Image 1 (cartoon, one colour):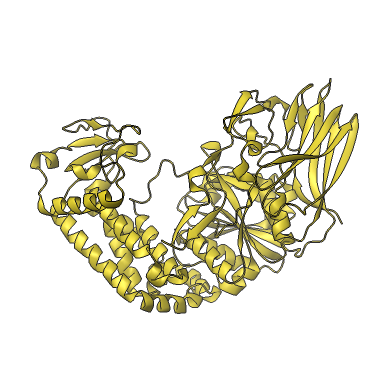
Image 2 (cartoon, rainbow, N blue to C red; image 1 turned 30 degrees about the vertical axis):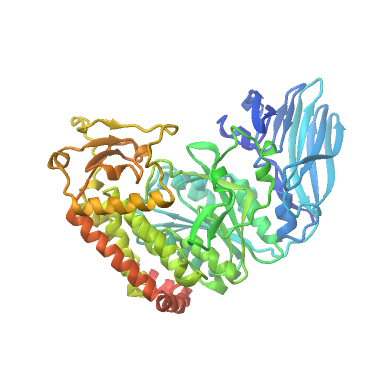
Amino acid sequence: MTHVLQNVVFPLDRDPDLLPLYADPETWSTIEGEAVRVSSRAHLGNILGRTRARIVAGRRVSLGTYFNAFPASYWQHWTSVRDVRLTVHTNGPATILVYRSNGAGVHQRVATQEVTGVATTSFELSLTQFSDGGWIWFDVVADEKHAVLEGAEWTTEQEPARTGKASIGITTYNKPDYCVSTLTALADAPEVLELVDRIFLVDQGTQLVADEDGFDAVAERLGDALDVIRQPNLGGSGGFARAMHETLQRPESDFVQLLDDDVRIEPESLRRSIMFARFATNPILVGGHMFDLLDRPKLHGWAEVVDEVPFMWRNHYQDKMPHDFGAANLRQTPLLHMRMDADYNGWWMCLIPLDAIRAVGLSLPAFIKWDDAEFCLRAGEAGFPTVSMPGVALWHVSWVNKDDSIDWQAYFHARNRIVAGLLHSNTPRGGLLIRHSRRVDLKHLMMMQYYPVALRAQALRDVLAGPDHMRRNLATSMPAARALAAQHPETIVHKDPSTVLHSRRGRQVYKQLKKNEFDSPTGLKLRWFTLSTLVSHWVHRPDPANVAQPEVEFGKGDAHWWRLPHFDSALVSAADGSGKNIYTRDRARFRRMLLDSIRLHRQLRRRWPELQQQYRGALPDLVSDASWQQIFEEKA
């Protein structure tokens, strides 16, 4: 039996920013190691359908792109598939050229075929030389007349290790328009729905998806495949745990595909993730990459890991991300030809085998933040690795205009990272985790950001109280964190156009190439800067004039932790540009919070072995299906 592993597809959206992810009709050159576009002609008019494209006479189009090249190294490494067939359907005179790359991004041509008229051309290709990385792709060159690529697919005759379907779990909170768009995209993709058992839409909001324009029509199209579940807001972890729980009841499902709500999907990616998981030698988690919904060629990460020291997440090759495919295509970017192994994948898109859930449990009751990373680490320790799969991706609302390190989410960033460290860190007392956490507090205190410090202190107190608090305050921790903002005037974003806020000394502007002596201090300068600033803030009262009116003004990008501490108060632009926050030094609050932070971190360090034993012992119950079912029934 022939199994389609990957279809060649094109975007139906008339957005020129999308084209480089699917087809590359540009001419590129390399100048001093950098990919440079020589001729820019986006042929959107030549996209004839979901699988069809016109190749203009005399032009060459490469399918060596993110969505249409075949990630051979991942198939070789994670599956037993060793032979694939590329089948290309064309109409008109053309030349088909097949290429491969290795882990260093070096290209080689492996086959060439001239075609005329209506033709179907197949290439038998082996997956035996891609251990370190590499892709396979093809180009089409039209001759003296236009040619049409009617379609292409990558197939195998090998039988998959698993044949079950996937249920889709979408967790949403007041994003009904996005959800209807996602459901419509699924309804328009029958090739995906044939692999889907159920679509569980877990609606935890007050703006119901069922009330959104267009929902009734798409619900009728999806029929019994769609199951809308209403429950209180239990965060992403509660919504995804519900999707896991419901999928466990489905005998036809072998997987649950988790999807965020504020996304735009590429349906072919869902199909690919399910097929890859079916063919995997052993059950694996298949994660999708995340593109920026507001800057659509920009990929925010290829594979993510959790560093053992200081137990913090990051991208592989952090300095190279995000990658802009509008500026440098796949073939011109050697780094993207390397096979990169991941520790975890964000739950904006992640396929999880039910075997893993049965073995390690459901999501940690974390509400938001670190639930995805913690689950993947837990699954990995049990023998279920995570693969962040190239060619499997969606577009997600980016974090460019957000700073959740200083809003109510700071509580969850702090608490859940520490809990994940207690559960999975193998270094004594979490390595540098506690020192790093204390340093974060110091930075916020020196910047006059007292709200996140208060949230982080509550996070430490909850961690020290033991693991039972996670289930007990699952539904209340977010409202409590938000309510605390009322005690901190720096959280107010001043937007009133009738009131123009000014600072006494004007706007402070720093250029990247013109740094002052304290810019990003390191080593001894860092220690001296921190000590002297803490002493100064402890000893000196702020100037009353600077309390009455902000002393200086900073743009968000200039308001670094080594700049704000020099002033008594500051106007700082909000991350989304909607207004300004006023940071004002409060000596009494600074003293109290500094001492509290030192005390709590000392307790955490002293009690780490005890807490580690408590949290690890409580984990099986916290993540069990029975425990989560009880939560759902209590909150119903």
